Image (cartoon, helix red, strand yellow):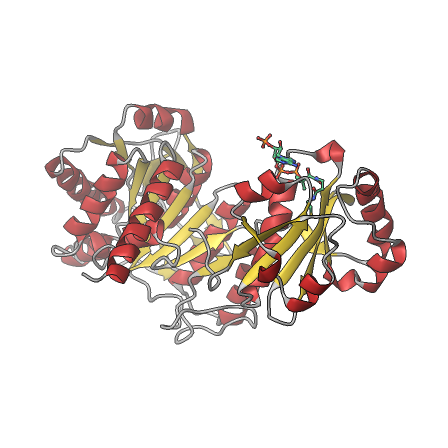
Length: 450
Ligand SMILES: CC(C)(COP(=O)(O)OP(=O)(O)OC[C@H]1O[C@@H](n2cnc3c(N)ncnc32)[C@H](O)[C@@H]1OP(=O)(O)O)[C@@H](O)C(=O)NCCC(=O)NCCS
């Protein structure tokens, strides 16, 4: 192994430890398609990786899909059921076999977990109700989720036991219903406020070879869309939905969007169960599937003319204290396209600006937060947004000049630099009387934490 390879390995171990520390005590809900569970070769390897996550202190909830197993059992007993929009209409004749298949798949998980010396329990924390008759279609014994017993599930997790939840729910009167395991995983994820929700699926990857892309979507070398923000999902689904054609990925993206809006931080769609996919998706910045995330910078937008008065209101006391350089109404107006503001409920909490230089680097300046909203993370979000914008433009670095906020920037990954490190035109206009400290952050190609 040469020095570069060794360094890469060390970097990846550091990255993994960072993630482990971040996720210890967090809950991950993992839905796994039954076709993956039934794969004798690859599934035991995937399950061992799930056990590794549990050993690292992550609480795991497993939701096995049963579609393929139900198909096999129903076909064995010559029972056929219609499907509507990807949903099977389970008849009273079929439901005992549906139950059998659901628990069969859950038992397979239980057996493999026992072989890995993990405690697991198959349980019924789900109350279901009939889907009834909708648009003239009688859904018979196909149900939907009425309620999840979140506190009971939490108790199981606290005992370090892995709950396995089959896709059968009982109504208050004791009727069993076949429920969608995708919906089940989504509802459980919201009920336990999980950090992550995974859909391990046998559907094709979300890539440019299968789907039409939105103009602002980026893909990796293989054409895979490695991340989507919630605001991209709706237009992406509209672009790729064809009347009367059911597509699993579109269904999963709909649940992902809903889960994100209800506070699940990350939803991951992982296609297939190749060796290490789950660990790669969790522990590497690039991942192996498609990650759906909320826009972390949703409160930040480009400044408009009407914001100038508020920008002056926020910066004026800091200029008076000598913390920020004086900038008049006219200065801000002339450079308005460089300014961004942080706004909540039509109130500006902070601002920041970004200027491009001839060597491709960007200066971050005028980062300021209204004192009434200090220490709420606004400054950090503004800084990460401005840095991400520069990074998206493939800037090699961002720099800034500061007199009294050095530690704050050092803490956020900036390092001290010298006049010679500045672009020539900035170095030429450096105010030696002010003696500001120069801080720099080197940037790499755009990446996203998973
Ligand atoms: C620096 C500034 C933007 C931070 O905004 P914020 O929204 O309060 O920041 P965050 O919530 O992201 O971070 C708050 C943390 O930073 C710390 N912090 C704030 N100012 C700091 C400083 N000058 N030096 C070191 N740490 C500082 C706070 O103590 C707080 O620590 P805590 O989380 O342990 O309580 C804000 O204090 C400000 O407007 N400062 C004056 C303007 C300025 O210096 N701009 C930078 C030059 S461009």
